[in-house]
Each structure stands twice: as C-alpha cells, then as structure tokens.
Image 1 (spheres, rainbow, N blue to C red):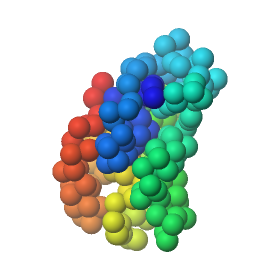
Image 2 (image 1 turned 30 degrees about the vertical axis):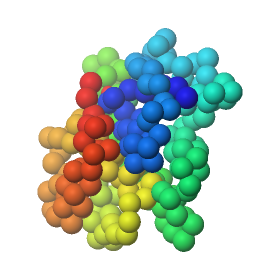
Image 3 (image 1 turned 45 degrees about the vertical axis):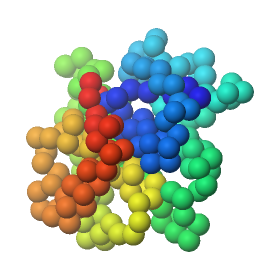
Image 4 (image 1 turned 120 degrees about the vertical axis):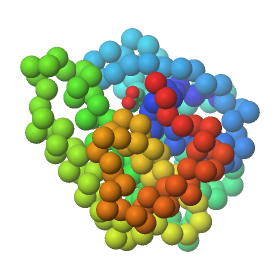
Length: 198
Ligand code: BEZ
C-alpha cells in the first residue's frame, strides 16, 4: 500500500497513528506530498481527483480517501477494534467532531498561506476559531472516556495540530480535563512517532 502523506497534516496523522496502533506500518510505503488548495501539482491527482491527502492506494491499484474511509479500511483489516460495535456511533461522532476541528484549524492556516495579504479575512479566521472553541468547550464538559478508539485518535490529532499551528491561542486554558487527557494520550508510542512537523 502507498500512503500519500504530509507530516504536518492532522488527517494524515490519524491514518499513521491507527496504522501504528494496529501494526500495519510495515505494509505501507509513505509517499510525501506537498500542496495547498491553490497548488495541487505535487498532490496525488492521478489517484484522487480532489488532489487531497491522505490518499491510500491498495495493491490492486484501488485508491481510498478521505481519512475516515482509510481508517475504517485499516481497522477492518486489523479486526475492527478501533470502531467498536458497542459504541460505533459515539466513535464516529467524535471522529467527525475532531475532523471538524482540524478542518477549521487548517482553514485558518490556509487563509494566511494561500491568500495574498489584501484578500485575507480576519472575520473568517475568527469564525473558524469560534467553531474550535465551541467544540473544545463541549468536549471539556462532556469528558472523554473509555478505551482508545478512532474518535479519540482523531481528537488527539486535532489537539496536536492546535499545538503545532495555533499554539498562541492556548487551547488548554480553562480546559484542565481535556489537557490531562491529551497529555496522557501524547505519551503513546504512536503519537510520539507522528508528532507533526513541516
Ligand atoms: C499544514 O502545513 O499545516 C498542513 C499541511 C498539509 C495538510 C494540512 C495542513
């Protein structure tokens, strides 16, 4: 299998964390891919017309995307532990919420990176951060519990991306439970090995 990947992408990190937790990294070749919404030259457009990462190609040439589909596939290959049947919709909902945090946080980065200075919208950036804030407040009050599942892996990758690209926003402030949970998760070998970098 070939994984089109970028070490800064929290969506790619989800895939790598799950692959490591399920012992599947040996079977995956990493193909570094760099791009942005306004430049897909080096993105896997032959395999994914959207030109987005992560994209995973299988031995028979089939391509899987996006991260949710890839993670579901890898988990099925490994016996289905990270999408447990007895809390499937809870897991999927937490994965979707965490992916939404990533979407908003990445859009904030792209607003500055992909648009020339005069075309940037501070209101758009703050609206994205407001989504992140609401999601984190919800998670702080609801709590995160139970054994490690794909929703929790996605949340860990989302919080790691906030630290990586939006450290100045200090998401930990006023959220001690979420901070403690993330600190524990961050010690796992799969998280340490996939720390985001440019
Ligand atoms: C980033 O540099 O923050 C980034 C790179 C790839 C995908 C998403 C984010």
